[in-house]
Length: 586
Ligand code: GLY
Image 1 (cartoon, rainbow, N blue to C red):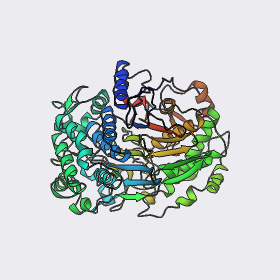
Image 2: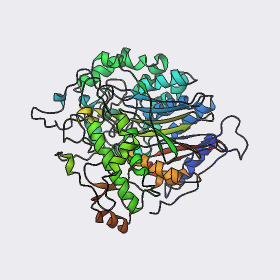
Image 3: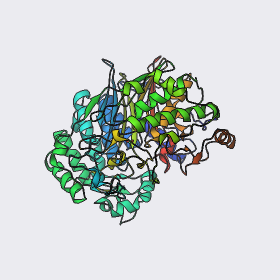
Image 4: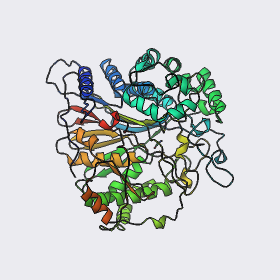
């Protein structure tokens, strides 16, 4: 399967200048045909024109990437930059992630090679009950997990940022949040992506809580270029800059959050916020074709599901995940890994999950034994009777950072679907998530991502809903790749392709990795989703002849952000998925 056309990455002598030049260049091209966005930073003294970049940042928005560079220039490390990028994204890409959401930061600290995942996933409030979301017959109450105060989990991003800065960073919270505060207070001109997303979610914004006055322009979706000011969000960021995590989880902001959510139908209590805790968890680590893969631990299913899929595929030695014979094997491996996701995975603070068994190579061999090289395996054995699924937009954001010293961060953060629950709580300016939808409401009841879940992912007070967010490191003889993407359950197959594509390259070129066409399978529904216009008829015919049902989705997906640092010369490069600039890229 041929890959998308590839442009030459911009490699520049000075990172900030390079970033600006790259963006200017991309705009001149109208973001097409292939927008090559390589933001490179020369750490230390960087005047020499031919010095390769040693640090790199890739994020979903140039203002966030730029702010991250400035922090590195001010002497901050990758962890500092990660706080700043998260805070700026909360302002300029509020429909994807922000203070009202959660996520996972995967860290590598160069000095002692410590690798850890900061779990800042939302938790269910103490007063949550299943009956808030299903009626007495067990039928889901329409929209209850997706819109309004009931849909929102207790946010983790502010606690995650404060932890990152305090435990791993070098600069103060005030320094790290300054760019976000300025952008929120003074405003910024929204880009076409913001305008497009707002148009799609215009109904939610008009009917939401405080969303029309903040995000709409005279009650209409704003046009590209609209100046968006968020003074209330600036004030909340100021409080976090001043008081750290307490600026959000206690005091005036917390009070306003609780009353705002509850006025919108929620059941939050002050103690839900005051007692919110991030958790440092060992990441999932496994080998694949000689490389070490490090990825998100539960409550993200990402690492376990990636490990299972790649362990199954290892014996097949597939070269190109997009040739039809290999695609069949990839789909079958995903089918089995996602089947186990549904059966076993949930928050390990609440349920026992046989992680060691699931990621064991011998277990993968036993799963692989049932794969027929010529035929798709029917899923009848799953004995599930799902209700009709509802299609909605998927969301989230990912960014990757490597600094000159080799510290790395892969962060995937989310408020779940675009503009989350459609609730900005009180006067906080904080747009709240709808991650409660990531819980399972019962056997056969799919969520937004058409994912089924089991008892392991059932709703419970203080529990974290199962996620698919998969910030990932790939370490091999060439160097280190930091990769991730938004996109709900499709994140896992996107990162899977990213790993396979990277390992197939002798000379690393990130752009083909983030631009290559995508397909996705997750066991149920038993269809293989494919991007529009990406796979030729012969490819489709080959898979259909094996019994796969293909479904072309009406828009491309993913907004992958990747950075790489070479072992041989320490040089760094970055690339952003061009899909992110179209309406796709959710
Ligand atoms: N809310 C999407 C995820 O966590 O996978």
